[in-house]
Every structure is written in structure tokens, then in C-alpha cells.
Image (cartoon, rainbow, N blue to C red; front, side, top):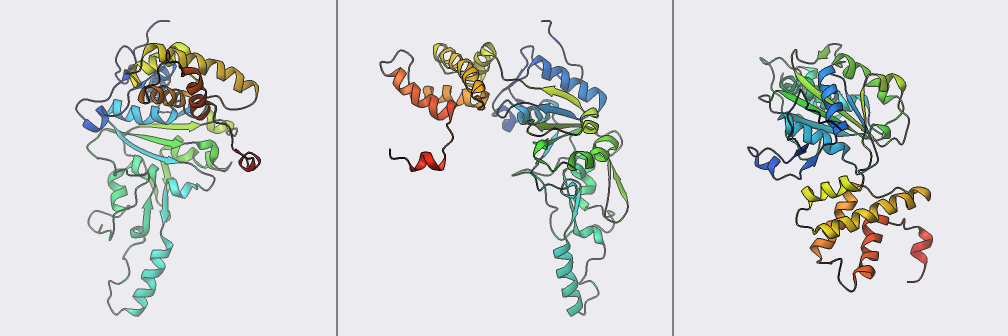
Length: 335
């Protein structure tokens, strides 16, 4: 298969991004190996401005693809993990009605003319689409700069994330596990995804800044079928589980201290387990679980040629790869 060179971003010839040496946080992160299919799909998404819908089993690297692309492009990264309770307002703009009500009560008991906030915008909580479309306006909650005086920092989505740096050229926006959402949410997202805009509670429309660069990545475990109108607006990518050779190559980068004999042995077991568990209707182990098994053997100094390898490996395989479901009946059985 011929090598594809992406036009909209730069990767090493082996498609392995090892972090930006200029950024200590990124250079310390685990390397990410792109598949050829992923490189082409991301390049198409950047060329068309369409969202990239990434499907695949858990643990195959869907979410890390988005975070890695933010590091590759040196763009901001914002994300939201979708649940059955996620609403469009959480992703665009919410109004803090409770704080507004409390302020109204305080104002009613106060003689100060400034006890109540002058503008409704001060009660806005920008969601990730607002941060991705216009981070400067999100910091001000949409207030004009001349009057913007928010009494607390706007809430920012994502755990331990800082608000986007306006000096960076673009933003990678990740909507993780869209298939967990209520059926109406994907269709509700068509306006911000398709038009780069959404409505504010006061009737105004917030639009993405002209010239702002953005890569939207949406992941799905395919637990629920997505609306055709939503899928049509996306560039699609299916991340399959890596074959044996690809697993060995991933371990060479992610677990370089592990012996090749050990890596190959575990990769062989992964392939056998995939077929066995697929036939029984259970989810086979993914790439992350493969690396867990390799790193466990490496850290515990369990060598393939040791006398107790088979016995020890059976238990390691059970807890890292097979992971049997523990039911009430199983817990009640005597050991």
C-alpha cells in the first residue's frame, strides 16, 4: 500500500506522533500511531470543514485521536463526554437561573441600585461550542467589553482543562460517545455543526469567528444507530482493532522495554481471544487491554521462558483480557 502524505498537517513517515518536544506536557504523553485510514479521514475533515465521526469498539483510540490531533496541529482542545442527560444547552449556553433568583432576592432586600446584575448575559455559562466558536466572547459571557465584569470565572467543560488560549490558531472539539445521547440530540446539533452558529437565550445568534479553524471529532461505540441526516453531514472513519502485526508495532512504541518474545506471545493470545469471545457474544480485548497485559508482565518480571509462565499467564489473561462479568450468583458462590 502506498504511503499517503497528509496535506493539512504533518506527521513522521511512520505515522507515529511522539509529542511536541517544544511542549513538555505533550512530549511526555504516550505516543499515538495513526492508521493510514485515520490520516486520510482527518485530512478530508480538515479540507471539507465537516465533522469527523469516528466509530469503533471501546479502547481502540477514538478519543485519543482527537486529543492527539490537537497536539499535532498545536490547537486548543475542548471536549464533552455525552451521556443520556446531555442537552443542547449544556453544549452551547446555559443560564444559571438559581444564581439569578438569589440575586433577585438580594436586590429586593437591598437599597443599592447595583445589587442586581445589569445584564442577563452575566448569568450565561458558555458550553464547548461557544468556547470553540469564540473563546474571547465566551470569557465575557457575550457581554460587550465595555461593560463585561463577570463576578466569577465562566465554567469550563472538561476535567482539569483550562479555557482555550486565544493565541492558538484553531480548536479541536471532541464530542465523546454521541451514541449515549437521547435520540433527539444528534439532530439538535445540526445547526452548530452545519452552520457554525447557535441561538442565545436573548434571541441573538452566536456565530463562529470568521477564519477560525476548527476540527470537530465525534465518537461512537455504535451502541445506537445515529440519524441519517446527522451521519450525512460527517466524514466517517471506522477504527478497527489492530491486527497482530499492528499490535506488535504499537507495543514497540508504547512499551519499548518489553521483550519482543513477550509482545508477540501476548499478541497471539489477543488474536485467539478475539475469535473466541466474538463467537460467545462478548466484547474482545482492545489495544489498551493488550498494552495492560504486556506492561503487567514487564513490570512483574514474568518471562515467557519461566517455569511458571503458563500458570501465571492464565491469571493475568483472566484479569486483563478476558475480564469475566461478576454477577450476583458468582459472588455468592464459595471460593
